[in-house]
Figure 1 (tube, rainbow, N blue to C red):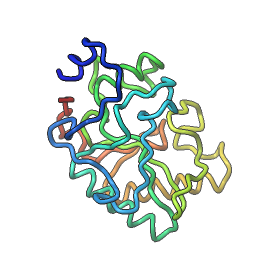
Figure 2 (cartoon, helix red, strand yellow):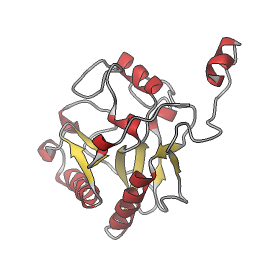
Figure 3 (cartoon, helix red, strand yellow):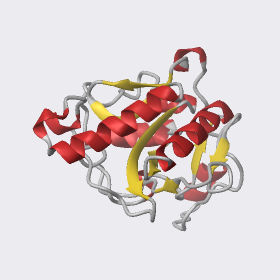
Figure 4 (cartoon, helix red, strand yellow):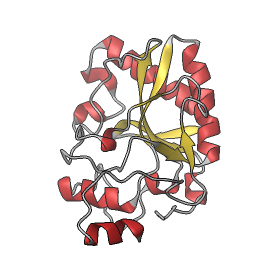
Length: 199
């Protein structure tokens, strides 16, 4: 309501969440998940809309999801990698913007349905080296092509191997994946959580 009022008054500044944007959400940070690299793509113009659709670069998830992410980070560290977070909880306003840019039901949930990301139990992730440098993976985030799927035969062996290392670490920590997006993972019991509405 506050944001809508500001926009009606002609405010064009950068809005930043002063508190958790939804009930039950906890901020993901270097304190809550030590070693994680946070690169929220929708807080930049580097996404399929070509514009910033998040108010800031902070990431939010349910506490249960964060605890599982900690396990992934520790697992990957022993293998020489750091976990990169591209997306976490996603408000409906962002989902509408994504759908408007690419109304493709194979890769995106239409705004008329409930996105998995709206529950605070889903993440889009990648890998970096121990210094935090992003590594080459099968595709870029939201690159909706054949290279985005879980069949890594169409990418260099080393790149496919990294994607498998990420996949195995996520699975061991209690996440499940989807066949068309190597970067997307959900808590295995994600369906038992309600969507979280933006304040």
